[in-house]
Length: 109
Image (cartoon, rainbow, N blue to C red; front, side):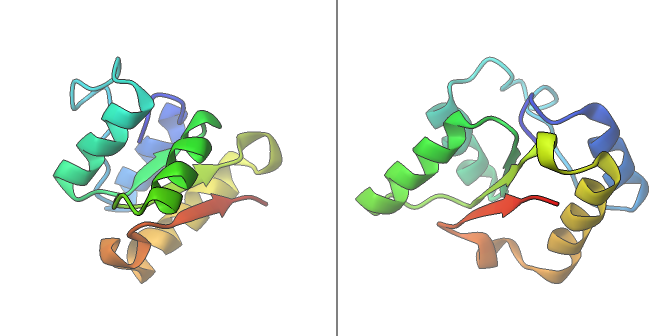
């Protein structure tokens, strides 16, 4: 989870036994978007973000063929916290991280 994801989302996912790591916990809160995406690749974790700047970074990597572990963009202004939690839980339980490789997913209402 990057710094733009509200703490209640992270907390609720953890209550549902979803393995979540925040950028703050990883010491990566001050990383640039490319650095944070590289860090998520090192850890083998899909990056969940609400930062629109990540959209351009992910698209750029797709176009240039630069592998990345996947980005899930949470459109917070168009979805409720509860729906966001439910959808992220479905993603986490139904998919394998490899299913998200080099993909950009939009989580909306």
